[in-house]
Length: 166
Image 1 (tube, rainbow, N blue to C red):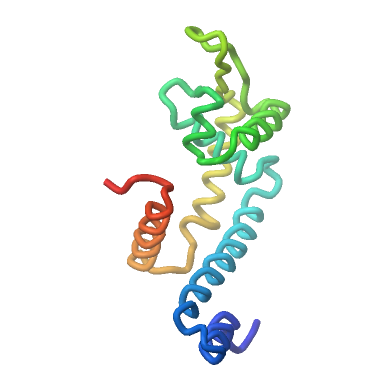
Image 2: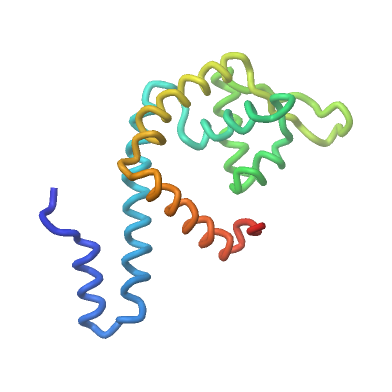
C-alpha cells in the first residue's frame, strides 16, 4: 500500500506544468478508472466459481426481472447498453451452460427470444447473494456518499447521452 495518493500527486504535476484547467478532470477520470478496476476485482472474486462473468450475470438478472422471463436479443442489447455482438456472445455462453434458452417469438418469426432457465434463475440468485454481501453492500462508503456518487455519475451519464434525466 502506498503512503500517498498517486492520483493526487499526478494532479499536482498537472498543475505544475500549467494544465490547471484540466487537473481536476484528469484526477476525476483517473479516479473513476482506478475505482472501476477495484470494483471489478471484487466482482470477479465474488463471482468466482459461479461460471458467469459480470456481463453474463447482468443478462441473467435482466431476464429474471422481466414479466415473462424472456426478451428479444435487441431489447437485451438496448437495456444493457452494449453492442448486440456482446449480447450474442454472452447469450451463447449462457445457453451452452444451460442458464438461458432461445425460442422463436410467438408473433414475429424474425425475432428470437432469450429466456432464463430454472438453473439460470438459481445461479442468478446465488450470484446476487454473493455480490450483495461482498460488493454492493460493502463499498466502504457511507450511505450519503453512495447516494451522492450515484447522483453525480447519473448526471455525467445523462450529459453524455446515456439516458434522459426526468
